[in-house]
Amino acid sequence: MTAHRSLVRRATAPAVVATAAVVLAACGGGDSSGGHDGHRTSSPSASALTQQGDHNSSDVAFATGMIPHHRQAVEMADLAADRASSQQVKELADKIKKAQGPEIKTMSGWLESWGEQVPAEDEGMDHGGHGMPGMMSADDMAKLEKSSGKAFDTAFLEMMVKHHEGAVEMAKTEQSQGAHKAAKDMAKDIVTSQTAEITQMNKLLGKG
Image (cartoon, rainbow, N blue to C red; front, side, top):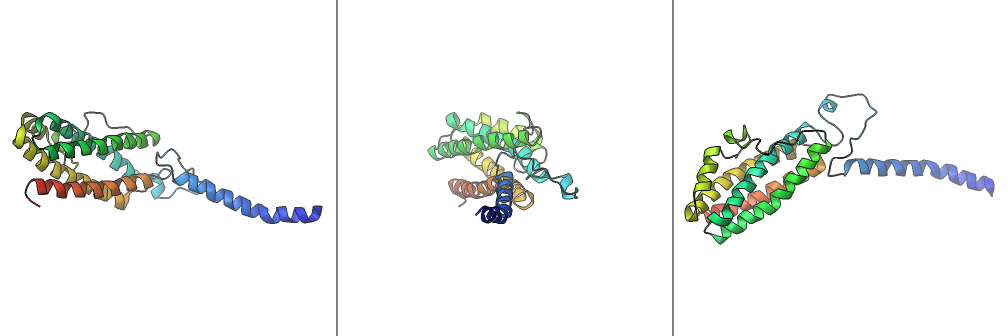
């Protein structure tokens, strides 16, 4: 009986080890916060220079660029509360704030866990966002802030369409070049939701 048990233990040991390896591998790649750095034992490759754990340089660029991009959208949406005349514009602005505010926090958490710097509050707000597509200039924001009523509604919708188009462009780049699953998932959500909002805003502008 003892010999039989010993043989059973020997036979099942490799399966236990294999199962443990699979579980550990799964835990290493599914953390949306990017907290695991996925230590590798293999020799460095070309991609390893830009990839750490389950994220790469494209993921860093996505979060670093999208944070100020989202912040400006939230800033624009804040203006709608007491300037917009259309209830539909006010509701859209509130929807934008509720979606993008939490995403800013999530992306900031990724950058911190990756050892990267989170953009400063005012970073990217001037001069059209230093090349980020769809960012409004300081003059654009001043014009929006000074307008009200129907003039605000029109300016807000036209600017936000452009802003969303820029975000969709950035998100598509992340989808094709990123490595971090949670970042790619967020990018997919941005493409889906903001494309739908672009359609909605164009209809409000009479272009749909």
